[in-house]
Image (cartoon, rainbow, N blue to C red; front, side, top):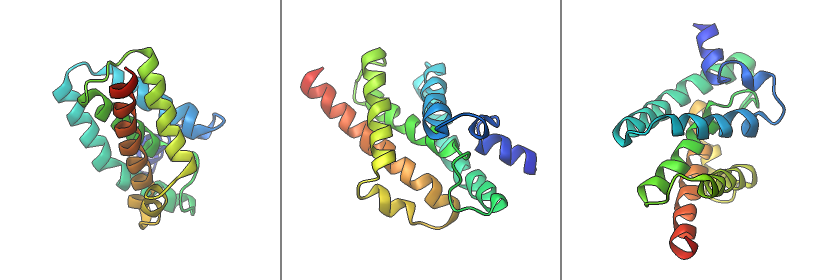
Length: 153
């Protein structure tokens, strides 16, 4: 079970081996994995499943490592990036290159800078806090991305 938890939390151990794992592994994997699913219902089901699984997996791996939010644990970034794109898709933003960059960039902006309420979400205990800040960052990124599309798209 330890192996599986570590494998999932670090997205196939990639979070342990690449620089800036939140961006290079977590967010890029979230973007790529999101695009694999063209069916909206399946995409939503996978997103909800990942969101429910991530706090447990990330929390267990953080406890095993003895850290609050270890940088190799990147499943939380996958979840946050996923929801940024999901919200943009629901708002009618085309899943094309320029808008994918907008969704990616906005998620990284909110995830790295952690403006309120992202920082407050991070204060939740255990795996919930590990994932909640990325989930809130993703929600804010998706809403702002949709707004940008409505204004300039």
